Image (cartoon, rainbow over all chains, first blue to last red; front, side, top):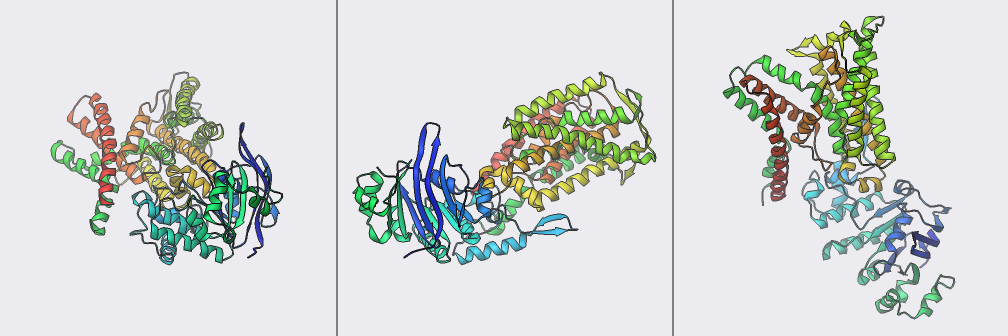
Length: 263
Length: 332
């Protein structure tokens, strides 16, 4: 299957002082394509996600998003251009209720007397109720502060939030870390559904099985470089583990990325 | 498991605990303290709550946003002193007059707000732009602004405020002077802003998790800056009201109010961690403190006891806060 290119990373490098977190990462994500980003702890996956979403500025390299070459200076800018991110540490404000979190930064507002912006609480609550119902997530009261909810419920809010807002590209940094079996299955369904709408998805995961269930392509990062970039159908969990740990047949990786920055 | 109804009741009581405390205290005082139960006494409590109350609004907003502003007391004193110097006719007052005479009200108010806003702006520059610790920055402001008050006044006082300004302090409506109504109005307006507008929602979100708010595209730095300016300007308003009430200004005007404001904010249910608390609760906290002050006066106890009780009350409030958390967890 081929997808029209949505995001292209070209030789992205990132230094933290003397430490080279990324040493030239290049790969592409297509519209409606799910790419699983795999790699060992400290391989540079999270750094990469932050660079794409505007949380970090790359030291060098080129990024082309939706036909335009650019990096995003802030998450707000990336978001405005259609990049949604679900971070490893959840981006929820636990002191605020479910509705407030769902609409964080995008509140529905009406105007009083022509200049006083007022939150449309009822309308927002209805939207959230509908969105959660569609996704099959049950939360007793949408007016409960998030601090009183379980880890799974929190993650569900976060996932449904990005699914609702959509955009063009969705980045998920270990989205299922705290989810149960059933919720994970729903989460994976959700990802497929989003991709079905033509949205590009990058999902970081540690769990091989999930990557094979959901991804069209698997990209392996090892020591700040792309160690493998293969269609899911052309590979096996064993081979991918090999790529992650560095015991792989380098030949295969080079086959798929002949100009890749691999020694 | 508790039913949703039980839970809603528990939540309601916990959310409005300070109001229940205020009611209990007022009833207890009315029964046990001679001469307490009079309209005049209650009106006096409301009037006393004016200055600390207004100051506490700005302080609470900054604390809800996850920062700290220790400078509000000195800022209020500076605004009061400048109002005094410009519009008082005796002491160090310059006795400025305007035509028509009532113009003195808006002009002095705008000057006070501007003075306060400026101090808040400086606090904002240091904490937000230069990333310095808010506690230290505003502690410094607390010291140097008070120093400025003493310096510009030379330690002397200004007396006899312009009569048209005095009216605001003397005129009563339903037994309560206008300045107290201004404080109540401020509480209503800012409660609305914090509860119902995107600005208030964003401030609360930032106080809860600034990183999440930033990722969600909320302009965290800008809003923090605004909250500092707001706290300063509101403190300026408190100073303006103080100058009107005392018909002038002295170099040590308002000393000790910061701690009362802090106590009120904490007792009112605002968490110093940020993100938690509501302004009506803060007003209840201020009223509670004033009630206790008044009761102690009526009972003829030495004033020093007030401070002891105040300290214990703050401790009790923090203790209550931890207890509330435990109760909530049981119901969740």
